[in-house]
Image (cartoon, rainbow, N blue to C red; front, side, top):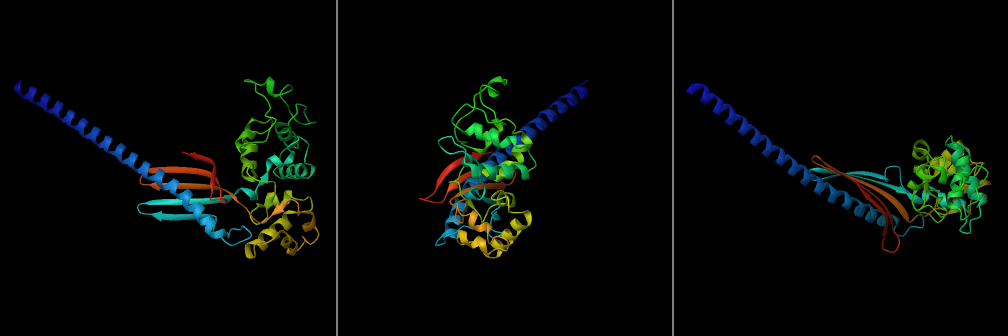
Length: 295
């Protein structure tokens, strides 16, 4: 009987000690993960500042903005962590708000350009009208568009058409026809941070093709190959690309070669901690944060 009691007490003590050791170990891991997360957060935030400094240095004394193929993304070892920074030029994207003037009238040239972008992505023409209706200041639906009384008020839950410019690209998900698939394909190509001109040094192939019905995929690729070797230093330089001798004249009111707004993706990994920061910043007037998201 004494032996049985002794064995039971021993078993209980072993179980208690095991539980204590496990709890201490778990707490230690949680604390260590928390510390890694805090360090990763600080490193990711620092990555944005580092990117802005790099942009300012790169653009110093230049009248144009261009990235070499290996410049837009950098992987930087930092102690026992790794910092990954990617920079995207917002002014190389299509300015979504430009398809409608501030007075609500359609900007025919930019509307046509957006229509070409939508069609090249393989989507319905309706998307151009629904976006224009969302932005314009009236409540009259376009032929393939949608306004509050004829569409949005019938949804569950109902809401109103904004009738004002987009504040973020994410808003497109509220617009009729902009499904997750549509958003996923168009969002990397459009921006709300632009004065309406597109930087031909950084514009993706699809955006270059949208500038004119005469710009084929082959011509867009020629422009990209040319700028990779010799960045466009002024808008007239586009005419140096074979096939753009005449087209280049018609693009002058749509294009630029300099940018001042950039989207920065900064990811830091320290131990088990990972933090992401996405920021949209300006490089003029000392820099200004237009958008910030951490996760």
